[in-house]
Image 1 (cartoon, rainbow, N blue to C red):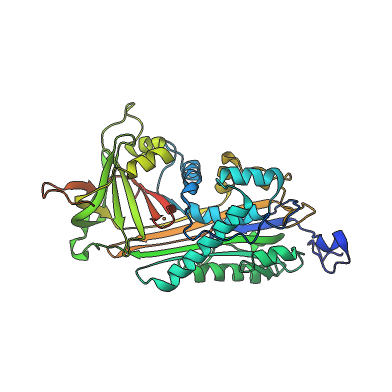
Image 2 (image 1 turned 60 degrees about the horizontal axis):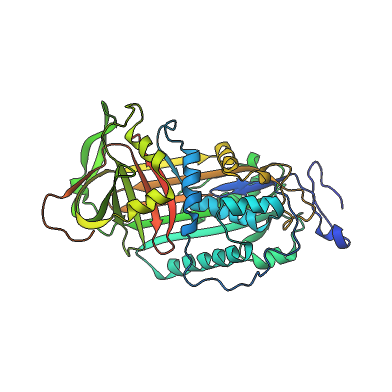
Length: 433
């Protein structure tokens, strides 16, 4: 074994342990989120005890909800966060699952607990099933687009175990990370193609310094409203950033039948805006405008504080079909998350993977890898036709009485939900035009 310049690298292997060895300093980890990484670990199996377990026909990702909400509240802390926010918890979850497949010991236990995974075999089967489901939907449906792609870029000098390349044959590709410019271009090209050029750069050559592996997820969604807004009805209207301050925005208007409900636990009105095909919807949670108990917390922050998997599920259960008078802003958002994502994941309990205690021995039996950095970038545009979102790393008939008024003229929470897999794809807060 010999090294190339100042970088650690494996050239030729001779036998036994040396064939499985690899010199490295960092694992770059992207998930357009990008998880830039150095990871470490060891395990007697390849990835699971049953790498060929049959994938479920109808995967349900409802178990991701606690992770999605937990990470959201770590990144956008109620009471202290300001401004707009948008990210894809599902994209981050996917990239971390790739790391989970390479982990062992306490590192695997932490990932399994925080990501709400049952075991490696079931996780791999579900992962394959979701990948198959999105590929089928992409090929057979023109009403909407949900594209999901994962890559595991490995340095050409890294001796990855053959079984990993076999189990993750679609994900694993070898790349010369010593040529930082070319490697960054390759990663950014993959992200750009998957996200339809909504995200054209998620890493720079400097990000890839000393990197030996990049675990990447890119996600893209485009849906047209089942009931579109008429552009002729869009007009300037007030959006109240606080009770006494407002900004003029392009406000879309629509009066029709939708599913809506009221949550007393959250202190919010909930609206479902389905996309064509009704396999996906945007849900908007509009806080009550009434003052909070201490008159210091905003209605949005009070709602976010009370937001849990239980209260969210209970709120969605109140939805009933009724006529709704909707006014909601057109908006665009872009968010880049780097250092704060590492910190949020560590607060949730994923700690070892970022430290020298990392155990990623499925990838490197000598346990010399750890996560260096995580990067997540997400964008969204909402207009009269529908929604388009990307991440590299979102009623019942009633009497014709006065319709429910759903006037989004103050900060609100929203998320794009895949109704087939019961999973939040993208999630955000619109607070500031």
